[in-house]
Image (cartoon, rainbow, N blue to C red; front, side, top):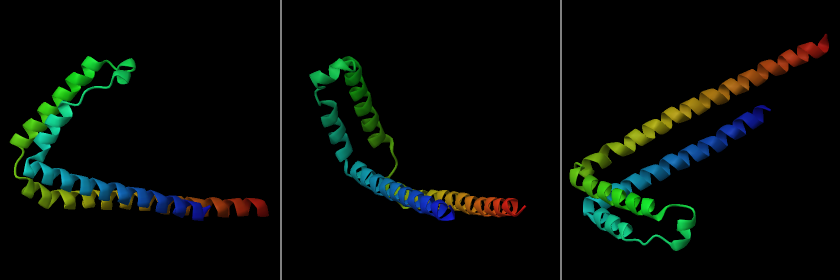
Length: 131
C-alpha cells in the first residue's frame, strides 16, 4: 500500500509540473505576443469569426456574438493598459515556480502522512492478529 501512495505522489507531481511548465510557456508566449501588438489583431480576427449554424442548436448565437465582442474589447483594452510586458516576464516565471514549489511541498507532506498512517495501521493490524 505504501508503494501505491508514492506512485500516486509521483503521478500527481508529474501532472503538477507539466501544468506549471505549460502555464509558464503560455504566459511567456502571450506576453511576447502582446508586446508585439499581434494580440489585438488576433482578437479582431477572432471577433469576426462567424458562429456556425449547428452551434445555434445548443447555444444562442446572439449571446455568442456578444461574448466575442466583449472578448475583443477586453483584449484590446488590456493591450493598451498593460504595463511593459518585459517587466511582467521578469517576475511571472519565478512566481509560477514558487507556486510549484509550494504545491509540491503540500503533495510531499500528504504522501509522507499517508506513508506514516499506513505504517501505523499495518502495525496495529499485526498487533491485533497476534491477540
